[in-house]
Length: 250
Image (cartoon, rainbow, N blue to C red):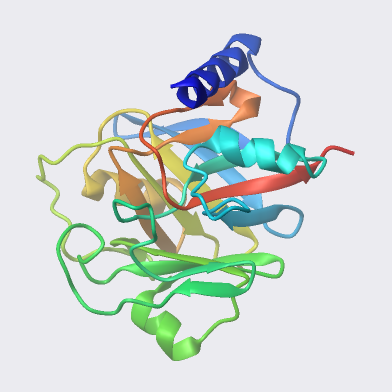
């Protein structure tokens, strides 16, 4: 109870202080077809984008504030973060997961239940100075070098086209988040919807609003954002993988 209360207080204080000093990540409000989104663009040539799962004692961080507190002890801080992929009840990643060069979960190529198993799914690969979303079978074929990687699904945009299983008249609406990458790998666009959207609408925003060739669904319903420049630190269910930009305090 005490731990949860401290997280609530921390998030409340951040919200009350309003927009923070400019950070390395640019977050903007955008819209398409009457749906609203927050888009955070990460310049991969300048910024330190990482994945986080467990703390030094092996316990999942679970919340953005826990990651930030760990970084503060190293004279660093979290400049931006988002939930970074689907996970099991114990918060272990459902699919491929690499953290600081160490593979913690293998690639899953088979279909299955839920959004993750709605093939094709994909993998976000973070390497030196770039980030790329790969369709899973392409990732297996090309074997890119990833310092960090997280697998999720389904793909939203594949080579400029929407996932073939998405329906324009779908009635399944959730707050959703995902990531798209530029063709040169220099920019990663992290997006969270501000109203409930379908997968078709969400994917269309990446294709038509951001014009990225590849985009990956990260999750829905539990989607959350940490953006100090917006005075935002969403709280809710405990998360598995967390993806975020790290900055030095100096």
